[in-house]
Amino acid sequence: MFEQFLFAHYSGLVLWQNKPLTDKKAIDQMITQILIEQRKVDQPQEIRSYNYFYQVVPELELILIASISKHVNLPNIKEILAGLCISFIKEYEASIRSCDVDYEPENYAQFKGEFDANLRSLITRGQLAKPLPELKELKESKVETKVEAKTEETPVAQPKQAEVAPSTVTEVKQSTDDAVNAVQEPKEDPKQRMKRLQEEIRNQKQQQLKQVSDKIKENKPEKPTTIMKQSEKPKEENYSFEDVEQKPEEELYVSHESSLKQIVKQTSQKNETFWSSLTKKQIDPETVSKIADNIREKMISSNVSPQIVDAIVTKIQENCIQAATMQRAKTVVTQIVQEQIQKIIRIDPNNLLNSALDWQQKRKSGLVTKPFIITIVGINGMGKTTTIAKLLYKFVQMGLKCFVCACDSFRSGAVEQLQTHCDRLKCKMFQQGYGKNPSSIAQYGILEATKTDFDVVFIDTAGRMHNNTALMHELGKLVKDNKPDRVVYVGEALIGSTGITQLKEFDSQLKSMSGRGIDGVVLSKFDTIGDKVGAALNFCYASGLPIYYVGIGQSYPDLGVVEVNDMVEMIV
Image 1: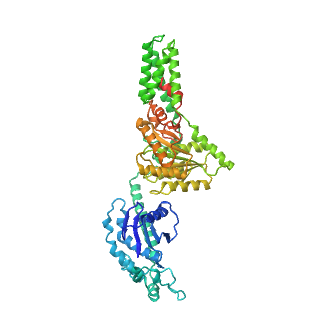
Image 2: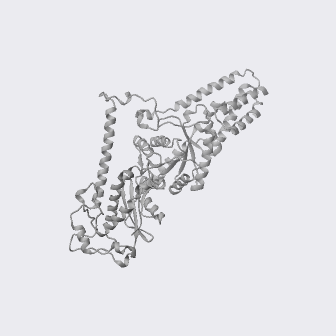
């Protein structure tokens, strides 16, 4: 009777099906609408020549999808599905709960016989073929039909034989008297039983969580009764920004920008020592060679790429020999390094912020309606979520109303981590949990932000390698569908030339998938590289993209800007 009938898990595993799928596209369409996009799907859903029905059991992350010819008229189809769903859960509940880690298709193979027997019994008698073991008092449970068979005024509609396929006539045909007799006894409706079972499962989970919580409390030392002021709370030494709940809140708002200036100062002092060691007052080829070698060594040790080093050193050798004095030589070297760095590097910290502020004014003037959209992309582990938190802090400080779309529905804990940041910074977040379509999450999030009058929307995406075609295609779809105003790549300052290759390939792949590439870069973990500032130069030299900010600490204000003069001081 059913063309397609299957039980599937939210993870995408098909636990059981009555036959190999004949229309996979229709099943994918149903799952996308129900689970990923979380739409309210009317039943039946007509797709081509079939009517599709479904049942969802959130507590077990289980979905039932069934299709039947649209020419078959079966009044109690939903009750039949409810009964079959109950029988499947009662038989395989333990396996369903562990299927995402221990999936064995043969565990469910024996359901075929039970399915056929229950289907036949539900159609002909309105009840399951055998009573459920836990509910002995309901040995002859019946399924109510949708029509009001309990009243004499409303007759039970019989299926028309002309509308039913020949193979299903004997299964569907049922007299009015039999149908009335099947529902007159006061038995529990399978739909009500389904709700009750879900409630039992929910209560069981809550009880398990309570037991775990009680055990944890038993092992914890008692807290002192003295109430400490926020400023007196002990600071944790080993703090990771990835777990903001472990750090006293006031520390999250302390800037560490002075640490970057300290590195510049220390490096500059070392450079002064070199210049002091040059005792000759006049410039000669030997002195020029020493200066060039020193600059080359400093730049290479700072992880500046060889192409940039060669260009700068050649310029120094050409111009330094013309200097009359040592002091003049130092001035010439400083000017050359500064000019070359300015040609290469693009530091543009105001691009994001000023663009968002300008957009805010346009919204207030009625010129635009949607928020300013910023999509954060990059490979795994570069600090995208942390960067979003720091950007949120900076934007909120400037009076912008910020909204976040949690589109990293792959990494475990990503949604909760982002929610913690949003709660601390008083920003609203839109999320649909895990395993959902990122493009759809962003789309609905932007609609919500537009309705509720937000100025800026940040879209957090899952990390992915540039050579993963499937994931890059997914990201390309998100960018193409939602048309962000800025696409920001978060790269790590530590990884050097590898990071440059990743950035260029990432940009190229994104352009091919969505028609647009990366607009700018945020270099994370810049505070960990000491005087090795070459990463910033290399990123700009290789990609031509501007650097918006660099991450210089583990607190919200720690988005710094690398000034050209600072880089010159660290090299010359």
